[in-house]
Image 1 (cartoon, one colour):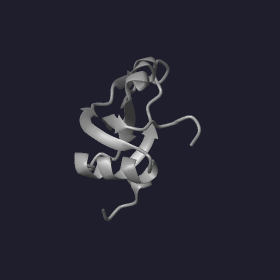
Image 2: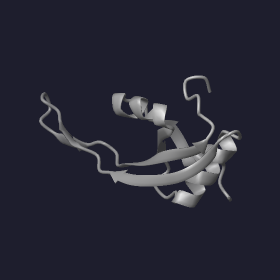
Image 3: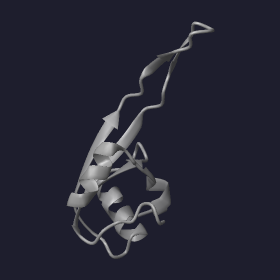
Image 4: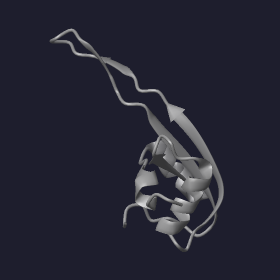
Length: 97
């Protein structure tokens, strides 16, 4: 792995849906757009050494178009890539670290 693990895993996603999935050992992260599943698995296991990853699913999310009411311009939110990581063993404390 040539890049640092913190460059691949940008931040955890904290939403109602992802928070409920944490009980089943499924965690969601915003990752680098050019990261593949193998790099994501290695980065998670490097950042959290007591965790074993079972499965990694990725999705590319297209940014929404947003309007400004005052200036009447259209802007676009950035595209993001998310990884849904299923753990085989261990747990991740995303609020503590």
